[in-house]
Image 1 (cartoon, rainbow, N blue to C red):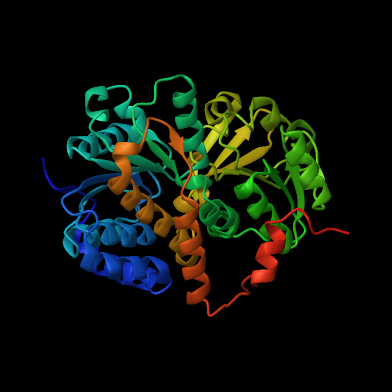
Image 2: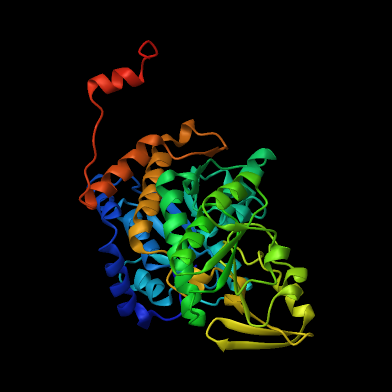
Amino acid sequence: MPNYDVTNLKLAPAGKKRIEWADNDMPVLKEIRKKWKKTKPLKGIKTSSCMHVTCETANLMITLKAGGADVLLCASNPLSTQDDVAASLVKDYGIKVYARKGENKKIYFKHLESAIKHQPEITMDDGADLLSLLHTKYQKQAFKIKGSMEETTTGVIRLKALEQAGKLMVPIIAVNDARTKNLFDNRYGTGQSTLDGIIRATDILLAGKTVVVAGYGWCSRGFAMRARGMGSNVVVTEVDSIKALEAAMDGFRVMKMSEAAPIGDLFCTLTGDIHVVDIHHFKKMKDGAIVCNSGHFDVELNIKGLKKIAKKVRKEVRNFTDEYTLANGRRIFVLADGRLINLAAAEGHPASVMDMSFSTQALAAEDINRNYKKLQNKVYYVSEKIEEWIAKAKLKSMGITIDTLTSEQKKYLASWEIGT
């Protein structure tokens, strides 16, 4: 098996600059890497990671290698790969990479199989495609894996479904559910990078526009917050009563997607579910409506259905922007083929916020390698000890100090006798 499949190794110099630039804003991961160079907690361990191939991910791979691991990385999305970063990881850091931006589904799954043929003992997933393949085509190999980490809400949903069905073959650490991940990466990272991707693809002025946000989980509320900050009139759609109530009390208009469809200028889905924007919604949209997705898979927008009702499709009227003209003459602009807009048209989350997510990934991998014999085939949360260490390290890197409880305060919190 060849050690890599990337677009062009000549892109490596530019990729190395990006990797080094991101590293400047990832002090917690850098601290872990410095320690691991000495302790080698993953010595001799084969790891396969199916993740977005970005400069931030590159620094995680470099850290795993510093810890002694034999590292392989493949893409978790056909449009999220930064080709220069992939080239640099191969050429400058000696890491096996299988990723090409714009790769078709056949190549995508070929790369997934390369990750499995690496015979990993620990895996990292971003959407659970690697674990899904292990649970279907490569079940015998699944039993050899000590454990896996999952980075996304979508992936955790899939893996919990496997667990509930009694079919999960691998212990899973739900990195996405860690507070050091979802409170920051999902909210602030997705919020900023989604807006960045939309603006790069469209050059739209958000001030005064009606922006419809599908969902009000951490990713959705991060985007809604940032869109409002840019002067947009934000509408939230939800299926969860509690989250809908939260959105309303946070000051957003809340309504059904069918009610929002005629008034929205820009629609963005961030739910992890299928056909959130469907054919009957497209038919109601105004001329020039822009539609995009920032959920992990490209299923949230019913693009196939839109193609059926469109009398004309113009590809790439701008980079990452396709124009669909309906029978009524109205035009709908779809960004990035309905794939992750923040990674397809922009650079994904800023390094500073990925510092915490990928530090959580790294320490979870170390935890699995140390304790795998105790783990069952279940979905586990990241340990409180890991989360606390990362939060303290991040605060320290930001020059922030906080109070500590006094002995009196600790006693009060642990007692029931003291009252009015």
